[in-house]
Length: 375
Image 1 (cartoon, rainbow, N blue to C red):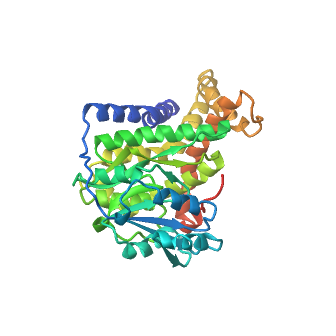
Image 2 (spheres, one colour):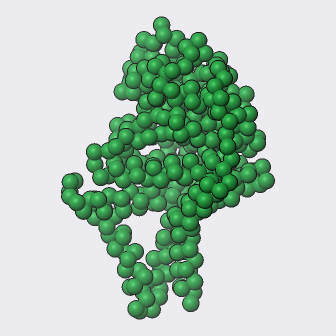
């Protein structure tokens, strides 16, 4: 009876986090949408790009920003070199005659680099964008239009992952589309629970320093604004493009993001108070995902603890699913079976990342940072 109760509880938790909560969120977004005012009002904007050893992407990134369909006299571009040791700074200096400024700081991580940049910003609004992603020409203008709504404190762009060449890359792209669907619905209900790190716009007067060891600047800063009473929204038409990533690269990213959520639990105790209008969604989504590996473990252990024939009826499909995910390591690229094994492995890696996120409790948070690099 105990094993059966644990099995049913774990199964209910898994179904809620993976399926029922996203469906409930979609219904709330459809039935009770909270509209956003969009209107073009010219604002000064400082684009802040924190970069470390980014010579592969920095020229392309700056060309993308400077090609924006935005009044040039209102645009200020500031690149912060976080202790780069390659040609990043040399390349940025070659853009000086086009108004791009360079700020060189000792290597201290992205939060420290952003903190150093904030006092040098000249714009009323700050666009925080990473070095690898390419912006659509109208991206910035669409983000600025959202700031006509006085209830909005931060607006996130829509990151589109380019199609991958392999099943592995397509599987991680599929996960990102699922993630974007959830973010879209959160924005329609009220607020996101963070921003899309490579592309988000904030009001300069709402910015506060980011703790140097904070893993998620794109969650810490928007949430600090949200807890002041402002909305965090998604502008779907403000598009940036990113390169496809492998499961291994996505796993490293998810370990960092899940560890960052753990940090937020003691950084923002107000997340569970009345100041957070989205606390139900925070618990269902963020804490729910952290619980996934433990729910899966409870599901398997409780199934194995049951008497025959229930033991293998309930544990067998689970073991088969794990076997399919592990088989992806040996299934050759190009085989049709890859269409089954690659998504299973991708899901397993993303769930396992929540378990590895506990490392933030025993290692320095900065050790979880990974420089942008080819996948």
